[in-house]
Length: 263
Image (cartoon, rainbow, N blue to C red; front, side, top):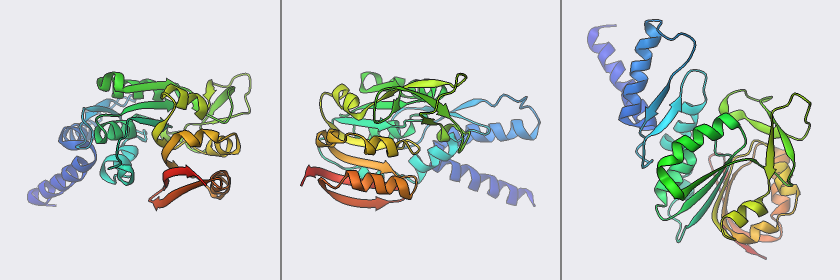
């Protein structure tokens, strides 16, 4: 490959990354590439700063085997949550399964008058999410808990994927389990002041328990965007939604119920 071809390839890569993590993030990833090439990564991968165009403030991103770059691509480049942009009078948002905080940052930027309650069960993710949302001040509250159908202790599991986006919870708790408190949607709606304009939910199969339990909290939700992870999740979810009317839209991996109201 000639010098000109290498330069063009490097520019294409930088431009592609810019669409995900902004120019600052792209340059930081290029600097990381140089460290990798020169064997200067000693086993501890650095955290870098990114500045996606659809986030008001700079964010942090973990590197190496982290899923953060994939999540950033989904949120900032593929714009998976664009389907819930442009709604009127959005004041309260609940982000269930907040991970690194990218979706919360995206929604806080899209709705500058809104506040977010971001819920994340994994302690490392919760700390990282808290750091990423700190600059939003009182507009962002980050809760260390797992959304569930009842209040109890749950075990953190990485059975399906050991990267950050695959952290899930389960009821079977062994003596050596890392545990977290469960919180119900009723409790979260109370923390919102009694209603939520948007509930975003990506909770790695926990929707099975959430929607098999009491779902009367839906009367206090205007719009719901959920990632349903398999056919069992879809069955339980749509069965729970039978008492409600809504405008349904399927977009990428999201099932979105707009304008929720009783039948």
